[in-house]
Amino acid sequence: MKGLLQSLEAIIAILLILTVFITVYSGRDPIPEFDTINWKSRGFEALKTLDNNNLLRDVVITNSSSVIKSRLSGLLPPQLNYDVVVCERNCGKPDIQSDKLTSVIYLVSGDLNNYLPRQVILYLW
Amino acid sequence: MAKGQIFIIIAVIVITIIVVLKTSLNLTNVLENKRFLELGLERLEFQNLRSELTKVIQVSYNQTNISENVNNFMSFAKESFLSRATILTGIGLTAMFPNVTSGANTSLNITVMNYLDDDISSLNLTFNNTQQNFTNMARSSAFTTSFVFNTTANINYSLMMRYRVPNTNSTENITIPVEIGKTKFVGFFDVKISSIRSEHRDKFTETVVLNVTRRV
View 1 (cartoon, rainbow over the protein chains, first blue to last red):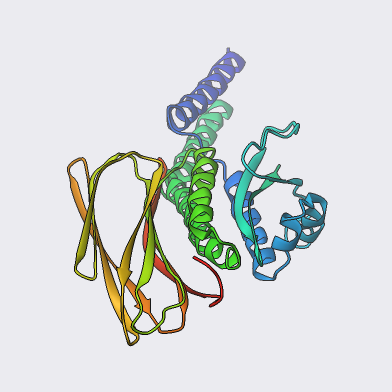
View 2 (view 1 turned 180 degrees about the vertical axis):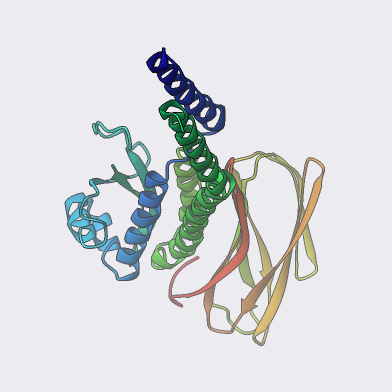
């Protein structure tokens, strides 16, 4: 009988905790995802840094995505995956499978005496 | 104390911890921080647009069609921002005059670009006491006109642009700095980006001295 009572009190305790937990944490907005917005900010700043150091425009007008990618390697966290696409208007979508895929776009109007508008799209995941 | 009552006491302690944790985690602040980061990124994107619009004029320095390039870039940028669920709107005016000779008539070529949400129902340009009126300028369109000036000294002319979109009248005064012996390009822009989170707007003028031997 005593053992049964102890079991009952244990069950009541568990139910109490569960009830409070569900009441407190249900029906509210989930905690927002910070990773992607942080990646976007860092990605944009990295592209801007390349541009400020004259390391972007020359390779954008020659469509050298791979060179931009290698130049970005020292500016982005090593654990972050990224890819670069340089395009004008119809850029399409990359074949990247990730739940956390995000991107930033940096506009470039040209270089020196060449008007050549391009979008530099940095995909991050 | 009975063994069973310990479970209840532990439950009360755990519940207290859950409630304290929940109270200390202020979701409003967390959301506010995220919004702050998003706004920061949008501000950077707007600065990128503004600086590239200025650079269009600089990189077109040796080309004969600066105004076309500016118009083309506005259209290009509008599409790019649309792909980010952001609306780019604005109005642009470019003014260009060839090498100014003292006492000789010089042409001031003007292009107005409408990238606003609405058609411009009426537009008035006033330069050097001369007025020109236009009506029904469709959105995403541009038109070109010209004025003539004659000066014997360096002078800052004022070009006034008054335009009307539904329910709104706007007036812009743009300085045209004329110097004898110089060819110049002046670009005025009033651009705005709007997303579900924020709006950024800026008005700015960029003046570039061009090669004196170029044809306008």
